[in-house]
Amino acid sequence: MQGSETDRRRGGSNAWVGVIVLLFVVAGAMRSHNASHFFIDYGFDETFNWEYVGDLTRTWALPEPDQHWSAARPPAFFYVAGAIARASGPSRVEAIHTIRRVSGFFGLLAIGAALGLIARLSSPPAREGPRLALAAGLMLFIPAHIYVSAMLNEEVMVAGWVTFALVLAVWEQVEGGEGWQSWARVVGIGVAGGLAFLTKLTGCLVVAAVAVSFVFDGWRRGDVRPALARAAVLSGVALLIGGWFYARSLILYGYLYPHSLELHSIMLSMPPGARDLFDYLRVSPAMFVDTRVDTPGLLHSVWGGTYVTWWFDGHRHFVPRVDPVVERIGGLILVLGALPTFAAAAGCLRGIRQARLSVRAPDTPMLAVTGLTLAGYALYTWQNPWFATVKASYLLGLALPYGFWASERLTAWSRESRWVAVGIGLDLGLLLVVIVAAFTFGTPLWDMTLGAHYPGLPWLPDQP
Image (cartoon, rainbow, N blue to C red):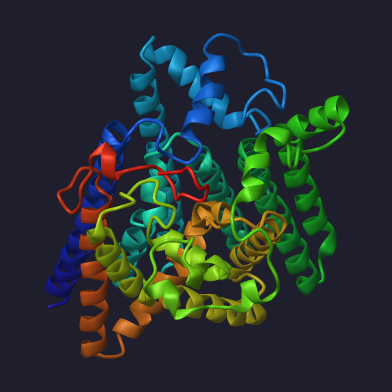
């Protein structure tokens, strides 16, 4: 009898492994297909980013900050892309396709690492299959991650490095202790955080947040000195790897990072042009109806616009601008996405309680990174008050906390009642199907011809 029970559990576990593998296969196939079929020059700043990459196929010299639109950005992504472009041969199109595919694969690796951590933290093992499948689906099929993976830009790379750093940070938080393995994790956090910093300025937030979370936890345990040492080592490694670029800019140009260069001045004409406190307090029901961030209901709602760009292409760079079916499909996704969003928020609140109760709670680094990332994003959108800066792709480094907290709550709610489980399953199942259909480029949901697919939202009078 006991053997039959064990066999049944093993069979159920294998079935969930198969589900997870299938989810990764579908997500990988989508990204590979999109990388090869999505229009060239239609992604966020893709034309400008290629200008940087194209320069690197001729010379490895760092450009002057005002040489072109993307020249002032940290170089990690562009140098990797330049190396890929050189290896791809003379075809610009083939080089862009290859860079996109590599970027998408890197994003999947980071999500795989996040899922591995959730598996390590899940208990009891006999019941972890459904939660892991939920976590995998939630992280793999974030629409913002899918459509940004089809573009030539650094968002997926920086999100990947942030995720790797956070995985190691949570692992260290739970394991703790001394010895070379602990110090190896600390150095690894610094390396991943430094590479995130060298990919994009916001990468520094994961370094600061993890360092603070370690010191805070050490203070709670009454053992601050080792925590300070770990924070100092990971910060030093990150600065060594990622800080040199900013130090170079300070020495050569007088600033750590340029702001409002002349060639970017066209953005000053973008609406809304100014923000006030209510832009961060206003959460309009329009976020479940309007699928464009330039609509009146979302233009002055930062978090509403962020929600729309997490669950849909609110900037109209991936989906067509003019097809009426887009609005209906987008509205459906936005409504269905409310459940996992609410679950992630509920899981975050539960994580705060867990972190208060236990000094080894895995939530502490995730809470620190989430809080500092959202604060940094709010500050950025305040200083740059244009609809183009309201992008959930800037928050993709939070995929691990999102997947961890949402899957934990959804699994717990599903075990309370069969009807609740059925409702959750229907919502998430339909959401998955619609996302796959909507964000696999070239599906017959809408017109994918160039005429209907002007990239981006118009804000100038002479734009089509």
